[in-house]
Image: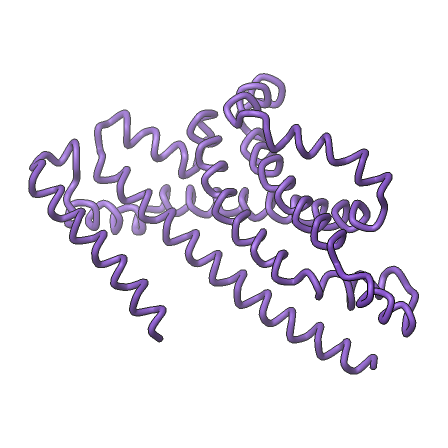
Amino acid sequence: MKKNLWSLGSVFILFIIWIIASSLISNEIVMPSPLSTLKAFFSIMTEGKHLEAIFLTLFRLLVALFFATLLGVTLGVFSGLNTSIRYVLRPIVTFLRTIPVISIVVILLIVFGFTITPYLITFLMIFPLIFQAISDGIENLEQELIDVFKLEDDSLLDGVRYCYLPLIGPQIKTVLLQSAGLGIKVLVMAEYLSQTRNSIGNSLYLAKVNLDYASVFAWTLLLIIIVVILEQFIRRFSYTKSAITSKKLYSKE
């Protein structure tokens, strides 16, 4: 309860700063007021084309997040368990983590066009985070815990399900929270640069071109809300999944 009050207090302070800045500047083009932003926000949430753009952007994010998680967890597990695989994959992952995002966007736009690029760029930005977290988490597990499990069950599949992944549960939750926030930012940027039809990124571009900065602020507010909702979902899902896994492990014992 106290944490929620502190969070609300922080949001309230930011809101007050926004009101003061808007009043001092007194120019809706430079700094839209909260009222004009709120009107633009409700306009976005009531127009069919904007709702379609929101849905398709979220769809692209979930698709990229799903495949990045699937491949990142799979390769991360093998990398954590096998040194040879780790040495082969680490340079590739390091390359993906260090290359400038704008360079990848331009290259993918040239090769694949504006339709596929948002999926690929989001995947390529999320995958290294998930892979690194899983690989490092398994690599740094205490060998005593693994040995105790192997005395009961030497199956690799059961080891991954009931031992390795549950033990690195906190790292998985953290990296998924990071991936959700990073994913939506990278995806919208890719949509903006590639001018993907029916997308939040394209809607932001059109609002900027038309000098409709109230809509720019409104879309930004919507993106913040989307990230908060995704993070809350991940927190609840990871908690539920952890409880179910612990119950299964207890029943096996």
